[in-house]
Length: 100
Image (tube, rainbow, N blue to C red):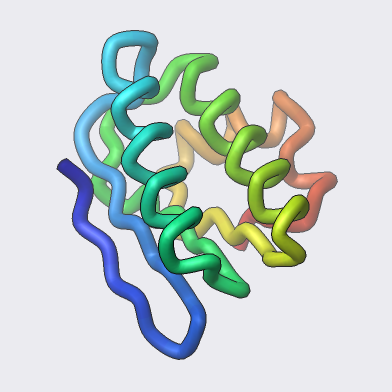
């Protein structure tokens, strides 16, 4: 279960723990379910409490970017710990302009 807030057409999802092949599917399903129900203009993924992430986390970010683009919304990735920011930069996600 993820924690989230919805205010002023903005959905913020607070991720925590580890994002890997074992957790990414359920995270994706929960985020997509909320996004489809609320249709926010902005989706913020808050990584401040994420301790570990593998390539499944990169896929999670990219998939939510595509999903938000399809509904005319924006994705924002916030509070990335330094080690995760390096991984995201290596994957080229910073070129999408979503990492804040």
